[in-house]
Each structure stands twice: as C-alpha cells, then as structure tokens.
Image (cartoon, rainbow, N blue to C red; front, side, top):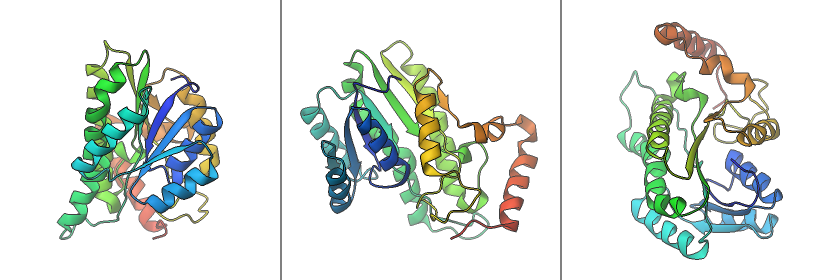
Length: 252
C-alpha cells in the first residue's frame, strides 16, 4: 500500500500496536482516525497527536458498528484505508469447562468485528481510486497457543476470511493485506520486557517497511519459520511450541 496521502480508520487505536500504527501513519502526514470504546483514552491519544480524529464505538456490537460507519462516511468521504486492529486475548483452558460468555466476546471482537466493519465500509472503499483493508491477525493464526485457544482460533478464522475477501475483491481497487504480529511487548498480554517479545518500536518499523510493498501478508522476519507451516507435520510443531511455553510461561 502507499504510506502517504491516505485517510485511515484504525480500530483499537488507543494502545499497543493500534496506537503505535496510528501515530506512525499520522507522522507520515496521513489523515488518521482512531476507534475504540473508551472516550477518555481516545481523547488522550488525540490530544497527544494534534489533528488525529477519533470515533467512540464498540467493535463487538453490530449496532455500534453501523453508527460508527455512518459517521465515518459522512465526516471522511475520502476514507480509503481500514485497519481492523482491535482484539482481546483472555487466557482459557480448552481442556476444561469453558466460559461461554468469554468465548463469545472474543469471537465478537476479533472475528465478527472485522467482518462487520469491513462489510459496513466496503462500498465506501470501492468508490476510492485506491483502497486497502488491513486485518491484524497473529502468528497464532498459524501456530496456536493452547492457553489462548479461542483467541488463536479467532485469528486463524480471520486469516481465512482475509484470503476469501482478497479473492472476492480481486477485480476492484481494494487491496487486502494481513499483518500477523509475533509476540510484541504490549499490554495485550502483559507488558513485561520479556526478551522473547519483540519491542513495539522495532515491530512497527519493520511492519511499515513491508507494508510499502505489495505483499499480501506482512510477516516480520523473526516469525517466518513459524509462518512456514509444515503441513502434516504441524502437530509436532504446535506441541513443541506449547511445551516450550509451558516450561517457561508467559507472564499473566
């Protein structure tokens, strides 16, 4: 995608990867609008970045998405980039009784939110000379983390959806790209300075460099081996990955 002269809406833009991407695109001179549930946090981010816009909405609520989409199209007729970044990552235990309300919340936020928001804005994006939808998935879309089973599954599903959406938009001016982050040191899990987590600034710098190209998937070099899923050998990879994390747990 082009990195300048865009009007960009990014969900989950008040913290972590979302805020960092929003601020990076803002510094490049793009018109950036962030979306999130907490109005106070939206105001803090926009105050720190004069000229950045904000819309308060709940990506897990279909009615809230419709209202936000209508406001976006009215206020920003040049909107040409949607970054579906908002996500939640509760820990769970697929080997025990699951909390259905938590599972539904994850799927409503991580999977149905991007599907619904893309649907609400797709005709607006098609009207632009050039437009991009970016889905923020995860390396866990390819190699699930067993202690976040529903989160991992939601990202695998979003990866699959992105491939179908890309195909269906192939004859339009709308491109579909996917960012699949590794473990980045943000508050999505717990910002801890763990050396296994990629520093946020390094992740953003490499991601922006790769976004400037035509790659359908934006994969930082550190996770290329995990993206190269070994097909029928994936079970040994997944088991080994999770056994290593059980031996040295992620901070919770």
